[in-house]
Amino acid sequence: MFWLVAVLSAAAVVFNSCNGNGDEPTPPTIAGTYVGTMTVEVLFPPPGGEEIFENQNIIITDEAGGLVGLNILNFAFNDYIELGNLEVTGISTTHVGDTTTLSKDGESDGPIIEFLGDLGTTIKLNSASVTSDGVLTLDIGVILLYDTGMEIFPLPVANVTFTGNISE
Image 1 (cartoon, rainbow, N blue to C red):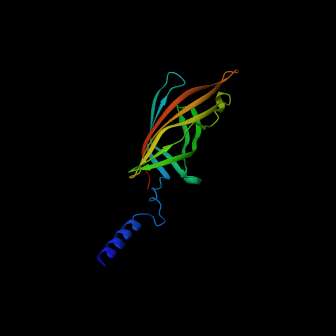
Image 2 (spheres, rainbow, N blue to C red):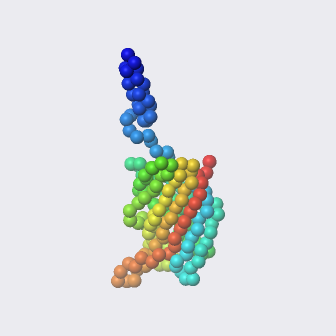
Image 3 (cartoon, one colour):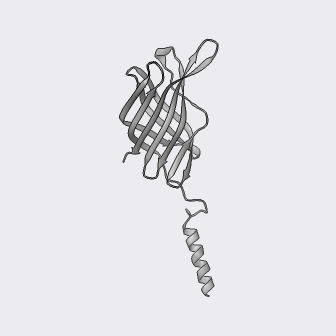
C-alpha cells in the first residue's frame, strides 16, 4: 500500500508540472509596447554620427504560428531622413531560462525613401531578446538599396540599438 501511495504522489507531481496536455510549459508572451532608449548610429549620409532618442516606443505583436512581429513607428534621423514605419514580420522566438530570443534569417523589406528617388530599404534583425522581467534589447541594421543602373547595391544607412521596458 505504501508503494502505491508513493507512485501516485509522484505521478501527481509530474502531471501538475506541465500545462495539462503533456507539453512543455507555455513560454511567456512578449507582445506589447516597450519604451526605452534608442541609439541610431548613422552610417550614411556622411559625416555620420550618433543620435539618441529617449522614450522611443517599439511594438512587438503576436503573429500566427507562434511568430512575432516588430514595429518602430515613424522612424527618422538626421532631422530630415524620415523612413516611416520599420516593420519586421515572421520572427521566431526561442525561450531558454529567463530569456526569449528573437531571430529571423535574411532581411525584411523596409519602406521606400521617396525623396531619394523611390529607393527601397531592407531591415536586418541582428539580435533581439526579452527577459522575463520585460526588458527588450534590440540591434537592427537599416540598409538602403541603391540602384546604380546596372545592379542594386546595398548601402548600410544606420545601425539601431534599443533597450527598454514593457509599458504597463
